[in-house]
Length: 255
Image (cartoon, rainbow, N blue to C red; front, side, top):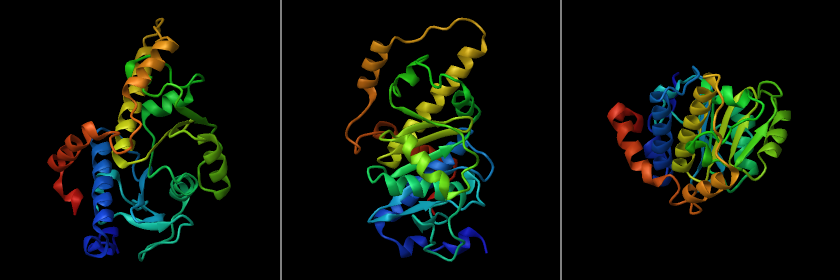
């Protein structure tokens, strides 16, 4: 039985708020795939279920990002118990996504990805440098978590949550990125800017020449210019355009 056949009638079974969250999260999968963010069937994006704060929506571990639809997303509680006829949640989806959403009620979306750029920067000793204007958004806002093996074991959940602390963004050493948001648009836009910052850093350092770093006082000022305190506004400047692009790529994501 395919994931789509399990959840083919999701829209008729869920609240309007949950359905919108499904559509938005499915759009994020399609958009990230479009931008080259994909590691076969690995990596996940998740969201807390509106009206059900102890549950999350997440893709099947058998799907690529480009296959995800609103109805194919699966619902679980934070212990991994499925809310549909599917196997229990496991691996990184359970350790990382359910773990963070359980520990951080202020967060509602969790994006974990592996790209050449974020793996590269996460492996550099000094992490993300203030080397371009996209990096400035994350000045003093990034946590770091030491690699302790693949996130297959529940014993790895608490150390990750501890490393994240009160931040929303982390680089997982020798591994990839973790971007959390108070909303889906915030997580998506922050992920996009973090990816551009990492790509810019890799490009600048690849030349083998001395680079110019942005001074701390300028980075702090720049961060204050672009970071939004109101979660209802964070990421919204770009979000409608992102949804339009997702629909142009393949409107079936919203089914």
